[in-house]
Image (cartoon, rainbow, N blue to C red):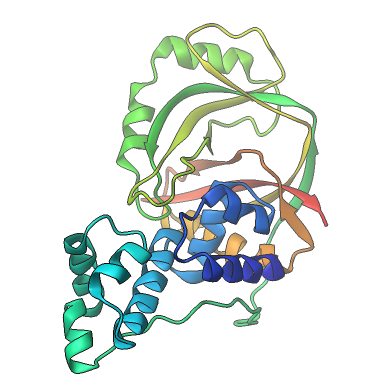
Length: 287
């Protein structure tokens, strides 16, 4: 995984002046667009969009210092106008492009590279499970991609589920985990937008194929899953565990992600405020 990630960094570096495609970038890491964005975010602490924007502006700063014209540099790095480039550059560097040429001041943002760093010595509990083909069935909605904090669109989706939909989901549920699950899939491929969307489904697992029009169906092939139990303050513990999976466990696990939806479920503790037991299920294959 680390080798593939560093190949991605090399690919981005050689195509900073091109129209970068997330699908092409993700090919180097061997995972879906959405999974790659999550891996990158949890390893680097920034979105892929932010990283590429910073690298473009850093290289633009060098070109300006070398005497290239503002207009040429703006169009070289994909900006549609000099004004748009100047606004982005000032927001990033704290000065206008013309100031670089006039004063020689520069701001840089180096290329990233990934290495394994062992810290803390803390173990991570997980188990590996195999499942036959099944369906996610439930209620779904396009929601903004969000890796931290409470996604209010998902909260509203949960509140929209009717008693009739709940009744059918309960009747269809016939495969573990016997819980209401949250599933994310079908993420936008255009990562150059400031905000992307994905489809989020709240539902259950079933091997049944006869489902009414009240519910959406997402088929999943027989797969292997890495399962990560966690408990603690919600949603912080769940999101911290997710970050550790992508930033610490996956790069050195001997497993790699496959192109299938990941999912999770959460059981709130009735005795403790904002405290929960959760499980995160990640689709994987042995390398």
